[in-house]
Length: 429
Image (cartoon, rainbow, N blue to C red; front, side, top):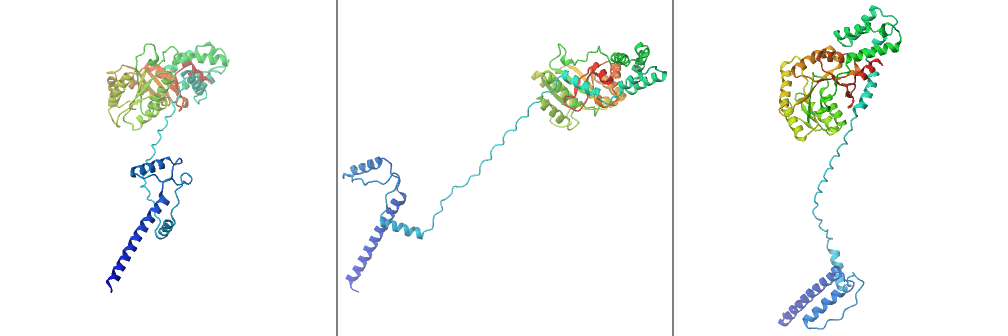
């Protein structure tokens, strides 16, 4: 082949390659101008300043500005560029925009549980009136049986024996029963008339004398000049309701606007501290408790006394474990609790909790507890469901300490100061 022909072919190929490269570059620029050109500002000032600066730096006069389309619209692309873009869009796969890595949403913080509103316990005067009505409506036949016998026209010796039997069955006690029968026999209102009103009044007076109206039944914590904090220790056998009574007693003090602290020194019964804490939480009363079951109850009492003193509480109520009165080691432990507590604070009150349904068995318990720790008052529970109301008389006569509180139901405010007149009126209603 002729050399000139070969040179011509090579030159043509080079020219074609140069033209193809130039056409490709131009088409790429046209595509960028049509699809990716930024929006032109509404005033057009920025573009003009930039063009003028470019012209000045190159020494050439600025080119006249082309009329712009509406604000924010890109200039139209050349036909060749548009065709190229169309072909590329037909041959290339659509690109899926890369989505950012999804971050797991942080869990929303759990809302703080709303604190339950504190209860406002019932006041003592309201309790006394309500409990008097409950006692009158109870099934205690003690006073009613006496009245029915004494209201007869003529009392025979058999009737008087029935009176004494009724008193004994009501756990008044043999000595107190004989004393009351002798006084009723010599009362002209009983033997000289059959008027029910006079008989009732005479029986009421005699029962009030027997129950005792002159005893100081106030809790030591509410007396003038009481220690602060005033310490109360609750004692009794298993099942009398000590822990429940401690919680109810705290409510009674709260109703009187006193600051109270509870000490859970019953460390043997697993649920005792939890039960006491439930009572305290309802009225905003703090509870001092051991870290584990079976801890030394005296240490809990010591810590409770220290904290009550530190916080200047009005009253500290210490609940103790129930114990049988015939277990000498357990009774000695009560003495230890008192001695350890008194290293921080003097003990002002020891309340013996008795179940009124136990009758004379309760008397045996009371005597042993009085010897072991010394008691200042008695709390009678379950007085509404039993014919054993006479234990009020016998326990006071045997121990020489007053019944200070009575419980007549399962409600949180069914504990009230003992009112002798209310008690007698209730059993005679």
